[in-house]
Image (tube, rainbow, N blue to C red):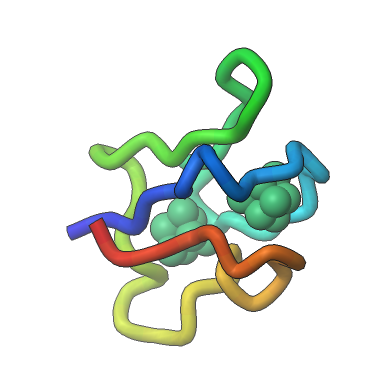
Length: 61
Ligand code: SF4
Ligand code: SF4
C-alpha cells in the first residue's frame, strides 16, 4: 500500500517532501518520487502529501 507520484505532472515544487511523516518522498532526478516501502498511506488518515500537492499528481499506486 503506497501512493505514487505521476511524474508527468510533478513540478518539483518540493512541498510534499516535508509533509511526509515517514520521509518517504525525495527528489529523483527532475521530479519527486515516493519510496513505496516507506509510504504507509498515512495510516488511513488523509495523505499529507496529497493535501499539499498543487498539481494533484499524487495518486493511488
Ligand atoms: S501518503 Fe503519507 S506516508 Fe505516504 S508518501 Fe504521502 S505523506 Fe508519506
Ligand atoms: S507536491 Fe506535487 S508537484 Fe510538488 S514535488 Fe510533490 S508531487 Fe511534485
